[in-house]
Amino acid sequence: MKRDRDEVEEEGNEERNKRKMEIVWQTPAHPAQKQDYIFHNAQFFGGNLTGKRHVRPYYFEFVSHVNKRWEGKTIVDLFAQEFRGRSRDYYVSAVKCGRIQVDGENIPVSYIVKRCQKISHFLHRHEPPVMAWDVEVLQNEPDVLTICKPASVPVHPCGQYRKNTVLGILQAEYGLAPLYPIHRLDRLVSGLLIVAKNPAKADIFRQHIEVGLVQKQYVAKVVGVFPDAEQVVDANIDYNAREGRSTAEVGISNGDTTLKGKAACTKFTRISTNGIYSIVLCEPVTGRTHQIRVHLQCTGHPIANDMLYLSDDVVSRSTLGTTADRAASLSGGSPETSCESHKEEYKYCSEDFSIDPMCTHCPNLAPNGYDGHEEGLWLHCVRYTGPEWVYECPYPDWASLT
Image: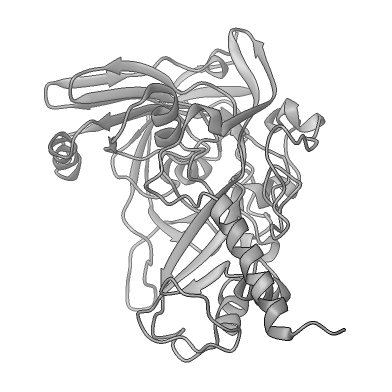
C-alpha cells in the first residue's frame, strides 16, 4: 500500500525539526570558551607550546541582507552565483532542509528574494587552525591591556576566523571582554598589541595615532647585509585587495603619469648582521597595508621568510583562490617557514566533534582549501610610544643572530 505523499512530507518535517531542536546555533554574540579549542601535535619546546590550535566545528548562523544586485534572483541562484565555495546541489539541499531561510522562514528553492530581506545560512562552521603559541598578557592595567600577539593569529574576527583570534582567545582563556584594539597587526606579524578595556580609552589612543603623536617600532630579519647608515624609504603604497598584495610607487605625478598609491614613509636602522641576515629596526611614519614589507623590498633587503615579497614572481591569489601569502608559499619557499606539525595530519576522532551530514568540510577539522602550511613572518612589533606613555614587547628568539 502506497503511503500518502503529505504523510511522508510531514514525517520528514518532524524529523528535521527534531534535529533542529538538538542543534545550538551560535551567533557573533556567543562568547568563545576554553573547551572550544583542540590542540593538535601540541608539545612544549624551549618553554613554548608548539603545534596547532584548532576550533571544534560549531553550528553558526551567517546573516546577510538582500542588496540591489541580489534582488529578483531565486534563492538558489543567489547562493550559487555569489557564494561559490559550495555546489549548486548543496544549496538546493540546504534550502529544502531549512538550512537557508529568508526572514526566519523556510522557503522553496524557486523563491525570489526581495530587497532588504534577511537571509540566514545555518552552517557547521570550521575555522582554520593557528599556531598553538600562547597569547601572553604583558601588562594588565585598569583601562589598558598589552599582549604579545603570536604570529598566525588574527586580532579580531575576520573571514573564516572568529574564535581563533586574539580577542576570542583572550575571552576564552582570561575572561577578558569586551576589548577594543587600538591598532592592528597583520595575521602573520607578531609582537606588541595594545587593547583598551573601554571605548573612551580607545578613543584617546586613536586620537593620538590620528594626529601623529605615536611612534611605532618593529624589528625584522632581512636578507643580506643591510647598510649601516639609516635608510629612509619614501614611496607610495598601492594595495591591490584582489591579490592581497601591495606595490611601491616611486616618482611624482605629472600629466602622463598618476601615482595611484597612498603616501608612505619608513625609516630603517640596522641593529646587527651576521653576513647572511640582518636584524633591522623599522619605524613606519605612516601606516599603509604591508608598508614595512614593501619598503624593505625596495631597499633590496626583504624579510627573509616573506614569500610574498621575496620575489616579484609570485602566484596570484585570484589564480589559486587562497590567501596571497599562502599562494606565494606554494610557488616555492624556504623550509624554515614550514610548521613542524604539518608533518602529521589530523585524523578524525569522534570525541573531538560530531560529523554533520550536510557539512562539506567534515570529517576534516580544518576547512576545505586549508593546505596545512602555516608560517609567521620575521616581523615583530616591539614598541609604541605616545604622549606620556610607552608600551614594549620582548624581542623574539629569531632576532638574535648568535
